Amino acid sequence: MAAKDYKIATLGSHTALQILKGARDEGFETIAVCTPQMAPVYKNFRAADKFIEISSVKDFFSVEEQLIRENAILIPHASLITYLNLDAIERMRVMYYGNKKILRWESDRLLERKLLQNAGLKLPRIFDSPAGIDRPVIVKFYGAKGGKGYFVVKNEKEFEEKMKQETTGEQYIIQEYIVGVPLYAHYFYSRMSSELEIMGFDKRYESNVDSIGRIAAKDQMNLNLETSYNIVGNIPVVVRESLLPQIFSMGTETVKAAEDAGGLFGPFCLEMIITPQLDFYVFELSARIVAGTNPYIAHSPYTYVRYNEPMSTGRRIAREIREAIAADRLDEILG
Ligand code: AMP
Image 1: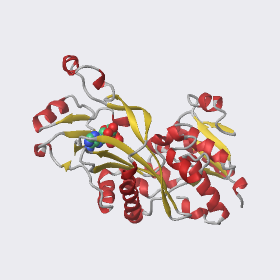
Image 2: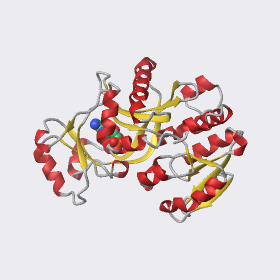
Image 3: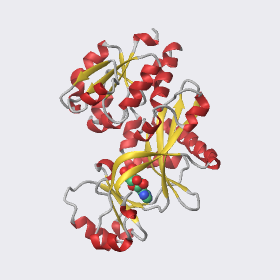
Image 4: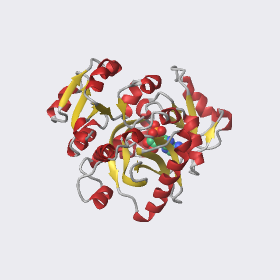
């Protein structure tokens, strides 16, 4: 079979514009599965060749049979993974790009931590109990979408004060707060070429943390502000070129360490804070395309150098699929 016998499908959300555009540029027919709320947007952008509507993301499985008939390969992204549960994704029968096994590692903060530690990366310290808090910490709730509800405290007393307002009973972790700049490094590991590529970098634009500095400290105190990290968008970053060797090596070690979890391939992201001493503290791994790649729908500075033609992460995925089909190795990149 050739690429023309397959279609590329994704859920209309998150990085769908980029995934669909990239698939089309690689010669695939495309399908966007959309809720009524999102469909007009993707239609307006002429983003896909075909639109399939579902009443809500939870109904995704009602169109699975249709996707199978279309011989579609589904490209997952965070919106799809967040709204469907892991068991359901593992049982999915439609062709699925990427490793499903790694989703368990990624969604369990302890397993994720083990993987990052095995890669030899520096991680922020975790406090098992509030009594141990002896420095600034960030308290993260597991289900917090986009970092909403996180808070920063520096001792047990402050922690208990904040927790009084917490009524959800949600699980949380207490993590050392690293003072530095956040950086999200986007990688792509190709199973076809066994090569790691740096696709680009971003930082997030979060409300209200990214605007608190716009008012004087005395006004911040007066307003009794609570910091929150609700993500609104992504801002491109180009790193100091001399940092690239370390960033490459961190990616390589992560790929090696992920072999225990069935392998990490395709797009992934290391989320880190870099201190003034240039220590890199990784606080999260995303084992799939991240929204921070969206500014580079044409190309990033890095993909422009390597490919000398438009190359987004979305297109890179489609190219990998095209090459795998041509080499009769598609099964190696499907979960
Ligand atoms: P997350 O939901 O884990 O992606 O984190 C949301 C935001 O909190 C990001 O903007 C990070 O910059 C910030 N953040 C997360 N963990 C830490 C940490 N250990 N130290 C400092 N900032 C952090």
